[in-house]
Image (tube, rainbow, N blue to C red; front, side, top):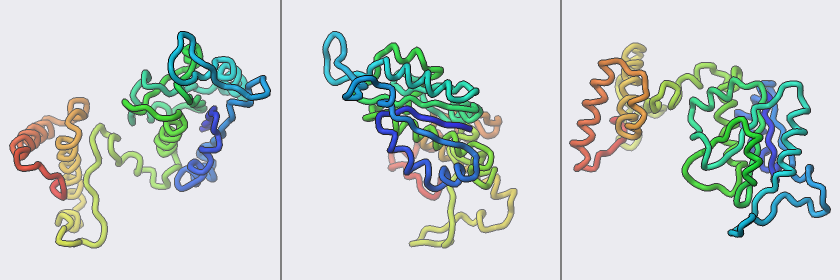
Length: 257
C-alpha cells in the first residue's frame, strides 16, 4: 500500500511513521509513506495557503487553489489513482470497519486541513470525508496519523503475528477481553485461575465471556450490532441487569471484567 499526505507541516509525520510497528512495516515493504508540503503549490513569494473568509468571521480559511493543484499533481504521480480522504467533523465517524475498508485500497491520499478549515469547494476533491470524533483538533495531521496507524496494522505482514489484528477490540464488534501477564499475583490481585489452567477450550470460553462482560459494562451501544448467538444475547441481558442492580453500589469494573 502507498500512503501519502498533503499538509502545511509535513515534518510531523516522519517521526511517528518511522517508529515501532509502522517503521518496521515500512522497512519490510508492507507500505510506503510520503508527506508533501502544501506550500509547494503556491505561487506568491509568501507561499500563502490561507485567506480571510467571505462574510467575515474569526480565523483564516485554507484557499482552494493550492489544495486543488496539490491533489491533482500528487494523484498524477502514479498510475494508480489514490483514494482521497479529507478530515472534518462533518465526515463519517472513523471506526474499525472503516479502517478495514481503507486497508483494501492500493493507494491513500490524506489531505490535512488547518486554521478554521478549508474553502468548501476543496471537499469536491474528496472520495471520502472522515471524522475522528466529536471534537476539534488544530489540524488534520493527528487524524491522518491515527487512520494510518489503524489501517497499516491490518495489512498482511505489519504485525508479525497475523492473528493479532483479528484478536483485538472491535474486530468482532466487541471490546477485547481482559488480559494478564506475570506475575500471577500482584498486590493481592490474582490472575483468573482459568488462564493458568492450560485448558484452551476453557480459556477461549472465559475470554469470550470477558469480552461480552466488558462490552456490556463499558460500551453497551456496541451490543446491538455485534453478531451474538442467542445464548450470548441472554448472557448480555443478564449482565446488563446485574450492572443496573450494582450501579447503586458503584459498579466497579476490575478483574471481574
